[in-house]
Amino acid sequence: MGEDRHGNLFWYFGGIHLYRESKPSGNWEVVAKTRDQWRSLRDSFQDSSDKEEIWFRETIEQNFDPILSGMETEIYSWTKNKRAARKVCQKTLLMTRVEST
Image (cartoon, rainbow, N blue to C red; front, side, top):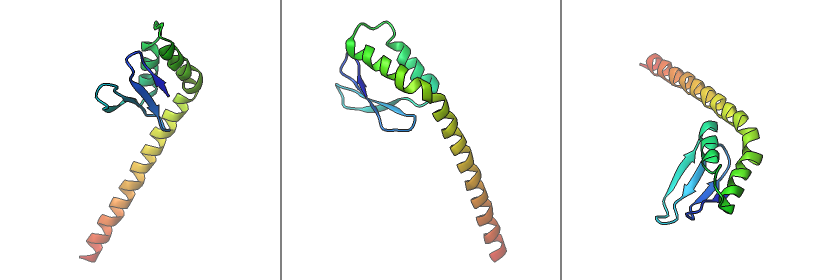
């Protein structure tokens, strides 16, 4: 998705996570998983004159800023619903075990 002046590569595979592949070590790390982290990363390139960093910042501004809030809300809602469903399943399983003893 982008590259910084140090040759580190930024990868986006869908969802809200953004990964960085470190050029020297080849290690991967999540660098953004919230709207605020995406914006902070974008803003870190604000004063850059490096053409790759400018392009990367503009890509985030144009393609991700408009949708990040909705993505974050959707993911939190999905997670909350998933946790609630898991609790219901656990409670049902516990009640089934109690009844069978």
